[in-house]
Structure formats: C-alpha cells, structure tokens
Amino acid sequence: MGLQLNVTCRTRDNTTVTREFSINPNKTTFGGSCTAQLVALELRSRNQLLALQFAINASCSRVFLHRVQQTLTPPDAGDPAFKAAHRPLSALQAAAGNSYEGNAEERVQVT
Image (tube, rainbow, N blue to C red):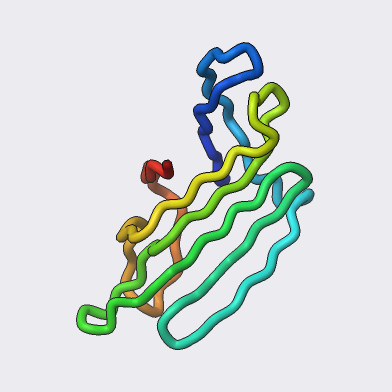
C-alpha cells in the first residue's frame, strides 16, 4: 500500500478534473524535523511537495496528523501549481510509541 493523492482542479479549458498522484519512494526525496511536540516530514518529487506535520496529545498519549500542505503541478492544470493546506487536523491517530501500520484507508480533504 502506498500514499496516493487525489487532486481536483481546473484545466486550461476551465474543465474540472480529478487526477491521482502517487508517491513513488524510488523517485522521492525527504526531509523533516522533530521536536518534543511536533514532527514534520517533507516528501518531494519532480512535480510535487507533500508536507505532513504530526503532533502529540500528551494528555491521552496519542499522536495524530495535525497539518497537511500540498503543492503540485498537474500536467493539464490551468494554474502553474496547485497549492492546498489544511490545519488543524486530528487524522491518522495512533497510540504514542507505536508506528502506523498502513493497513487502513483514511481520507483527509485538503482545500
């Protein structure tokens, strides 16, 4: 299972289309940072940037996806780049100290 982004945007001829963009681990670079409260992960490929920020709720020892930022250039987009961000979120929750298993699907709308 991988990470797939479904992007709805307007094309040059003003038609609304939805395109799928998959993260290819062999063609993606990564970076990020980590503090006691937040973890940031940036995934970059030829035409896209996906930035994820995870936070911890210390009162219940749970980590969750707090922020998503996405920038990409669909080949037929009317604008040179599609940009979207969403914050705050509380998606992809897991107990602190555990890793995500990736055996479930969760949809997060970013506008």
